[in-house]
Amino acid sequence: MCGRFTLTAEAKEVAKRFGVEISGSFYKNLAPRYNIAPTQPVVVLADDGKRYLTQMRWWLVPSWAKDPAIGNRMINARAETLTTKPAFRVAIRKRRCLIVADGFYEWQRLGKVKQPVRIVLKSKELFGFPQSLSQTIRAA
Image (cartoon, rainbow, N blue to C red; front, top):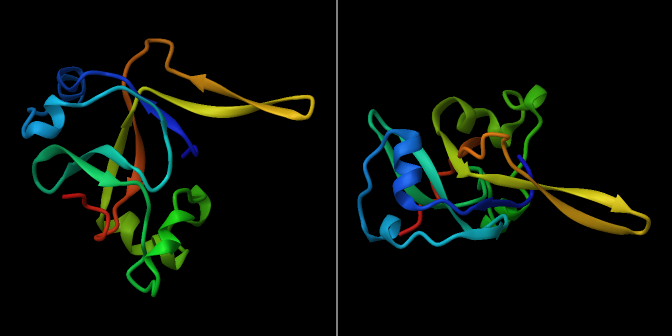
């Protein structure tokens, strides 16, 4: 997962792309966002027997963590160690979702300066980043 991403699509487009119905005022007021960062609210596709869109905080707070601030640093994991690292082991097996996006940023070095470059699918379609859910990230 990248460190910054975008979601500029309208709620109807998100719902259609992921095959869910729009519910709640949150989706009706979905505004374009061009710089979504860790710890901010994000739109996710979750499934607890039925697919649905919801808003969650982008971080992972492991069940054993004494300080929730650890979630600020836990946004990425290496695929090769996902099932062995204590912070991700249970979450990857039991609590997964997709973070909805339409682009993400990578950084290009231009001399001494780093320039963000937005990357989108050639088709311009929405996509989802796989993510593990922490029980503490659900937003009200």
